[in-house]
Amino acid sequence: MDCAALLHPIFSSLAFSFSSSRRSSFPAVSRSLAGSPSTARFASTNRSGAPPAPVVAQARRGSSLKENEVASPADFQFETPLKVVKYPDPLLRAKNKRIDSFDDNLKKLVHEMFDVMYKTDGIGLSAPQVGINVQLMVFNPVGERGEGEEIILVNPRVSRYSKKLVLYNEGCLSFPGIHADVQRPESVKIDARDINGARFTVNLSGLPARVFQHEFDHLQGVLFFDRMTEGVLEGIHAQLQALEKKYEEETGFPSPERIDETRQKKKVAVGFGKSSR
Image 1 (cartoon, one colour):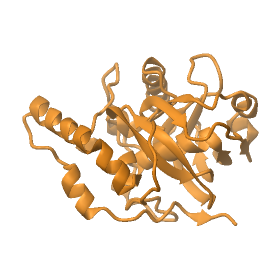
Image 2: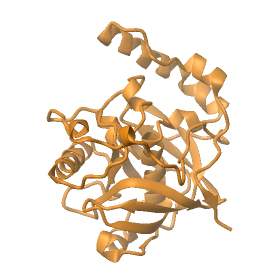
Image 3: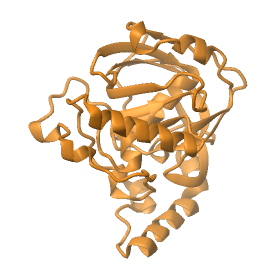
Image 4: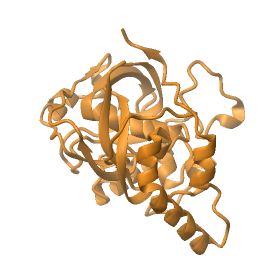
């Protein structure tokens, strides 16, 4: 997921599979994930428990983007080192633009994102989490520089997801110190582009699927607490309010989001795309 935090699966064993229609996009991925531990560091997910509640924002399959929704060179301007954006910063809810240019600016951003991910002991990170509102995520289920497989997904979309749901205890760098249970589909089928712009389709299950879904939510402006049940959310209510207060103290502005108001407007998630049979 996207926040470089600890993720502890509720279930002791999970089968990890990663099959791609373009092996050149993910060389050696199957070898890397075959030995993935059942407890891993996640750049955006952590822990919790109880039946889940769906969210409002989801993938817009087949939608056409207007010209102003495509990232420009200006959208890739940033200062290093990148810093993780914390809740309730509005950048976490902002629209993330589609990437059409696969140039050195993109490669530099990918490099810096992996650097932040590894330094924070994460296994996944999305661009909006470092203040860059574009459709980009990176992850490495092994979580160690030089080990495993570094995955780069540009403009990802979900085409299918399993009916079987799995409960995990998730955490997120954008929510320091907060861990709670989130239920998600066990497997997903996605379409995306690689760092060179090549299109590919890949099936993910187990930990890779969990990481992807957490990060994909970030690209849709969805935060992990949006998917928690009311009972689970109640358990982290005070911590979320504390983050809202800290934001106000550090910025001098009122919090752009308040958990009490969010809970009143909360709706059930509608899924990602087509559910597999």
